[in-house]
Image 1: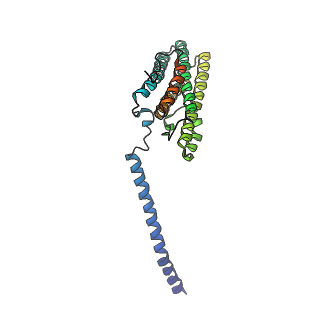
Image 2: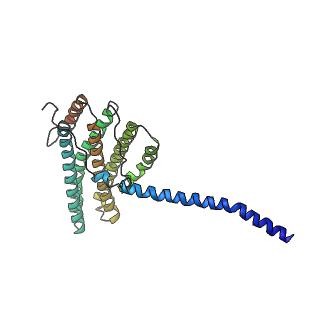
Image 3: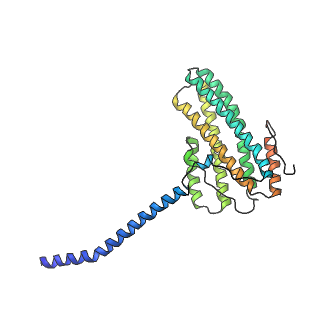
Length: 266
């Protein structure tokens, strides 16, 4: 009886061994494929999010560059001024001049308003011109991993999900624009709320000032992402579409603008 059990066990092992060996081969093959995929993604820079906000633009034709450059200059100038003003406020805070720090923050809110109007206006114009744009619109994912503020992080979850399941380039581009608009609106509200709270109490806590810092960081990133989207959509326009887009942008920048958008016939 014992011999029968032993023999039966040996037979079971012999029968199961090829299955186990095959399973191990499949498992090792799977690990190998995963490793190759990771290497390829790194070589092709598919996982490198740095190009989301510091990558180089592709070249535009001279007529399209004349449309793009004034808008980019306007946004970048406002963003630089806003950053310098907030840095001054942080410097005053480090020197324990809290009342002066919040006065400087109040100046920063004015510049934030100016930048916010241009960025939101550009996002709105791009959303209107997207449906009439011919052909496939190149789409790149927003670098959500670079955001720091809670106001933005609360908005990125749905974007990441939908971006994985949408196949139409225009649908994904429209989704990106909606994310940028919602995030910039949420950031503006949170920044103003934090400023009001701080001015009333002269709050010098790390928590509140870190909140201001994160708001500016993310707002500056959204402005850059919006310029990337503008550059992409502009490159897809027909001459007639580019002319209409230039007219819309001219209206957007008329108030307080430093430079004008050049029409195509110049």
